[in-house]
Image 1 (cartoon, one colour):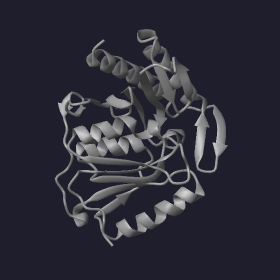
Image 2: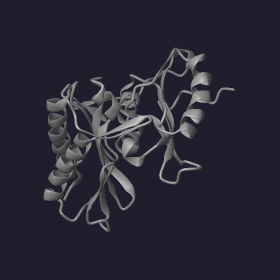
Image 3: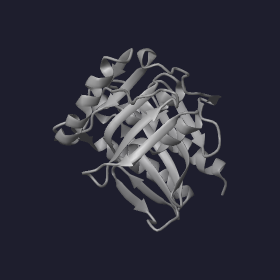
Length: 251
């Protein structure tokens, strides 16, 4: 198999899941669980099952690692990392800002990523060593180097500890940058950094499936993306993604 065959499968799966989400957007939804700062939908599960079915039909020896669980052969060197709806709260409240994120890791290295926004029909794709593309056209991070010119997205995760960590960063940045945004989809934040719409995205607690495709996309577009283990939550990561020239280390 070639990477292009894997990429085509990811694009097909993202499009299929996007059709499912768009068909259900604005309709009454089955809720599995309401949490303090999150919502678990039946549609999350259905979207991941659809993606899983497409990927494992073509690559039955591969593994799936997603927000809604695992599937396939978990000892495989190929692991698909799937977020079936990134921005579930936005989706539930009828805010058309959410996406599907699919990445493929081979022997621990990310080799491709796809992010699809079905409401805007925007599809980002990237292969390791290749160009970052939006709907087939190359994209590049912004050239903005001054904080006063920058637009940043600061994410807040779903625990009191992560909110308490994020608020000081937000307070620090909001008075220095042109605008701060809280968008509600980590994968789209990263896609926007890669496309030059945002200059940076910062969040103290994310999951791998939120950022796997986006990290590769930002780096292929000329930016920098730093992932570090969360000090208190072993399954979580902190992320700082920038255009590569913006200096966020301001006292």
